[in-house]
Length: 494
Image 1 (cartoon, helix red, strand yellow):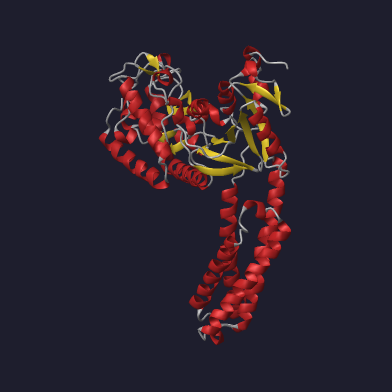
Image 2 (cartoon, one colour):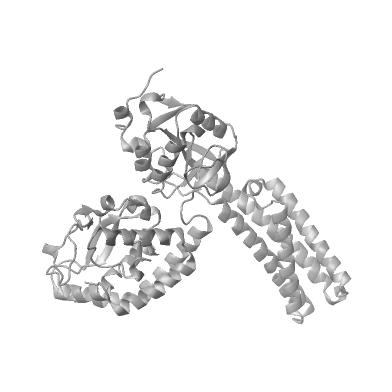
């Protein structure tokens, strides 16, 4: 059988490899499920309010007992969502089945109305409710609930055309286990998984094509390709006896903001395991999850968009005055734009107010800023002292390139001692599994300003990794509050 030399496979142009990972955002099934549950509850409450406004106020001409009718609608929403959850109706595969959804929704709503009627009869309060309201409420609610299912079906069709319901999966392992895994994934029939490529470090011992898919290179090539985006999951398909090699792969893949899975039965080993899950029909061990996924990513997105927009509006007059002061103080542009490490190691053009003389600026970031740095202008010294030079990065946040809170974006040529930062600190690239931030956990703990050695660099990375592993909205709020306090102290800012 023909074999591939490692130099041949790694010489494949990155453009060809990148096309294997379509640049598109996959739909989170968890978010869709949660959204439908919330919409169901809102629809029932809206139906109760509409029935009250139309029948009791519009027809009868009374607005008495609004609290009682509102409470009934709330109880109905709770019962309905509970019944649907217990029947598994909010599982994404079930949400895709329109006919099943329409039938189950009608059945659950009928059961909800029956339970409310029984409760009203037992508590002897049935006579205190308007039958016209009850009929209007029941009919309006079921129509709204069914309309949600129809609208969801249309959205699912659209997402399917866009390829946003497919998880792009890369396979590590070009042996028999990898071939068997690919065959099982592709035999599922639901089309929820697409094989983005096969990778293996044993290129001289594996075939060039496995189960109809090209072997695109080593795990190093996989990391390079994954950083271009478009990959949702990596599955390791290696035999149990390769525990040591699996552990090495897990360590290497940790720097990627991508779900990592192991396609074997649960085993005890020298690498972390979260829980047992499934990719399509294949059971997998969930070793690593990407940070900020599903509802966490939604919450983080809303936090960034809303707060950055509000801050830009509130600080617009101040930013205008700063821009004017920079132009009056020294010749050159108002803004300084520098490429820095962003999400998944991809470069992002970070915007700052210019604080140095144009002819002395260092776009590469290789030269550290030191106290009383002669390159800094008079206005720049004030801006850096108060950290006001960072304000334009709110635009980066609004554009989705950065977050308000996260590891600070570093210049690509930034050094720790006499070595490049990412060479000096082993886990440095792990901090790029989330978007960089204007402020972060390291900064509020005094880790800002000049890096005076390897130990200082490692401390900052350790704080960044802690933030990624322990993220919450509360932690972000805490960091934003502590940032304001740190700005008032103005330590290590020059």
